[in-house]
Length: 153
Image (tube, rainbow, N blue to C red; front, side):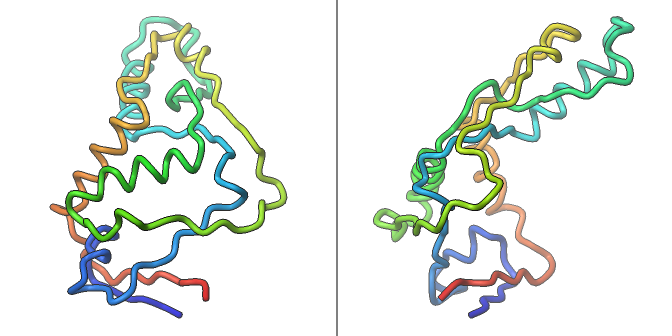
């Protein structure tokens, strides 16, 4: 099944746009944890590195995620909590669980110590703050091209 809509991902949740809310599939039981980052943290790290007087910062590769892990179930719950005011029908929306994918680690966390040591990187946004700001951005920035989503049966 395919759902096509000329609105943002969040607008597709609106009854006037999408007759069906897409199921959300989490691989594994949702207790796997990953590191995430907010784009503002990446911008922050790039500015700090570019403006650093430390010659050791040049020609390096850095992790700039938030210094922590978030369980996928927790990420889902945070996202739903931020959306409920605008989309009350999501109150009882729950993820569907799929098989754990081969190659996915059960837990992962980025090591930001190198960026912290060489140019003072300390993420300004944790996952909740970054997610809340990102979700707040979408309603005022509708997609300008059609978006197609493949739904599992």
